[in-house]
Length: 158
Image (cartoon, rainbow, N blue to C red; front, side, top):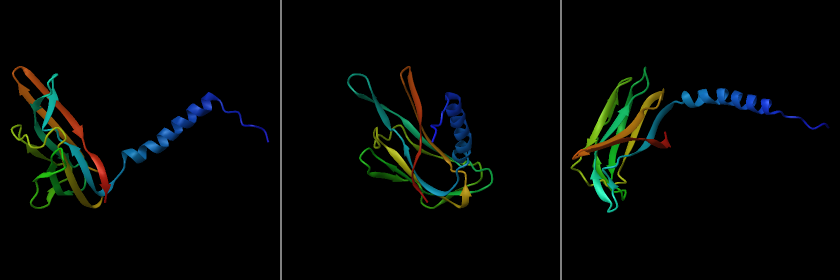
């Protein structure tokens, strides 16, 4: 049997083909529900002395599906030690197609710490485009302002 000669062009062509064949699956992934972990820093540290810089936290949840409603069943806020601080929902909340909602932790609420986080659970009647979940942290002090975002990560698929 003769060894197969593989050229660099063949390898590049195969990689490009694989990218285009696999990419649509990632872009068009759907779900019937998930549990999502979203970081939500109530403060960060600055300077050599590790001085805390307190932040307001906004959890933004956006239904990215243009045709289907989704239902939030849990929005819980935890501190750096994993202790439950606040349950933000008393009952499920529906988000219409392309609708958004938010949950706010005030800058004066220092209980979360630098490792604070949200656990969000959602469900839908059928397969839909998963929501976008981000936390936005912002604050100003004197003439200094700080803001940054963090994205949620799925930890359980329904």
